[in-house]
Length: 245
Image (cartoon, rainbow, N blue to C red; front, side):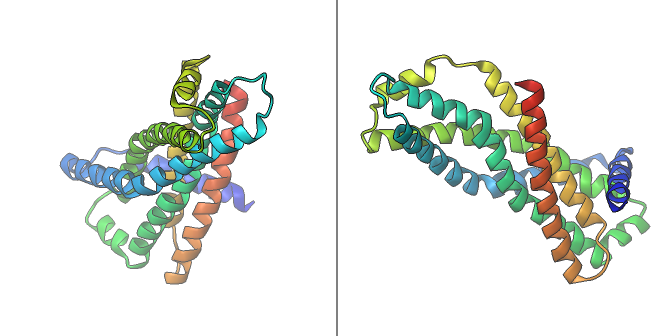
């Protein structure tokens, strides 16, 4: 029963976002601020994870492909498709659920506990629209960009690892990258990125906005928002794979 109560409250929170902005410039400024916070703030951890993710994929793929009948360029094909289809959109978004989600939930939770949201409502501002919508729109714009950057860096990391360890030459890796490439894989990765971005921003915003209590409840809401976001990201990953592949 609690699930249906929370789900209904979540839908009502999303419904409350859609209203005419009181001040368009104010909303635009908040949107750009959130783009900077989410995008630039998470770029470092995304870059580090992506490079090592591609490098490990190359090493483990080479370890498993021991048959001399399989050309070395196949390693690059497997790394490319693995990074684009699964690692960059899913693994990176799970990390972002922890980095971005906890920040959104704690920020809104602190505003709720310190009665800043109540003060904005007294001033006649639609707080759902002003505080939640820019975060969701910024995540939908920025997170797919981070996924694209992650895919590129993952492939580069795999190429560097393959070259430094002597597993395959740069020419063989580049040859494998171009073989049997399907542009649909990029579309599938972006479809997952947009879906996950909405989950990563909206779920923590809901839990943070509806915090009741004190500082202890902010921590609990932040933790719960990250857990629920990760579960929904994995569930959406399965649904999208079943529907689109």
